[in-house]
Image (cartoon, rainbow, N blue to C red):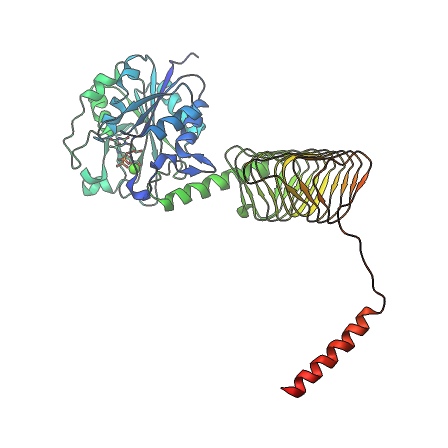
Length: 455
Ligand code: UD1
Ligand code: CA
């Protein structure tokens, strides 16, 4: 069946004063991605079609964020916040240039799913001119109520403030998501008045207009979690909680073991292979790929990193952007890695900082090794060759290279190239004085006795 093309209008003009933030509300993040980014990504999953984003005045940062997730998004500025119908009309040139379905989403409702939006479009296919996404909140206070006719179609949406007591008893509420199959939607919207408690142009008033002209309006229902609107920071945290619980379930269903699921935090783009075991308290920032069979032990923080198949990470490891670990690498406790590739089977098991460089296959980085990558002005590279062995507590002062198979003696400060296969040692020779300890103890004990007597 061929469907009319889709235009998605995303309302993002509200500053969100209840967030008490210097940033526009829709830039606040859930799972490492702005709420606006989530909504744009979901809209894009509906297949081809156009996106229009309605922002407030001086919201260049919101426009930029929209372009980041959808380069072809058209940006419209709503000069004054005069209500949701006025907000959609801010995109009237996009509406005018479009013949087909229109979907209206709120940028502060980040958890809406493609499946539900698909149901909305199916409702239009089934003959509705408008489809409204309804839900049954535990507490309906503040939401518009969906008033149904005898057939179960929608006859009106009544805003809480304008509703009578009997209307307020209705549990089915408006999520705000609406879909339209109406020729010249802008003309229909222009008929809406602002004769209500708020003096706003309500998008929801379109329902009564459409019904009055004998056209059908359908209700599609979704879960309360999915339509959660974020107005304040507690709701932002609630959205994060819901998103995380969905993603944990999805990962477990795809073959990932989470020993304590509630303590593992993913980003919107985290990729995890099969038979990965993740122990408690692990955080994934954006840009992480974990391949099959990896073990991530407790208390790791991982961002912008790839971990190759069969590797073991942690406990207490930190992988920062550019950490690229080949298969079977071992990274142990209190090791921080940034912008370094580690070859197959390389090991850095204890207390190290590896920043900017590379470690060859099978190399061993001893406890307490530091890549001294920064001179206060520039960052420099450290290259450790295949099979090299860097002794504990060594400082490798970049730029520097350790050749394949070479040894660095413990405690060395290495500033010059070490050629393949050699031993580099940089420390003073050890001295020994036989019997010294006993003489020292006797001398000091006598000195203390005299001092005690005198005092
Ligand atoms: C709206 C619905 C209500 C529904 C509720 C769900 C209307 C009239 N009411 O009410 O039925 O139950 O959402 O959360 O639509 N916005 C603009 N420009 C404006 C006004 C709003 O961009 O001029 C944006 C806001 O930033 C927000 C969204 O539209 O993202 C919803 O606006 P809001 O004022 O929060 O509507 P509600 O009163 O919550
Ligand atoms: Ca709202």
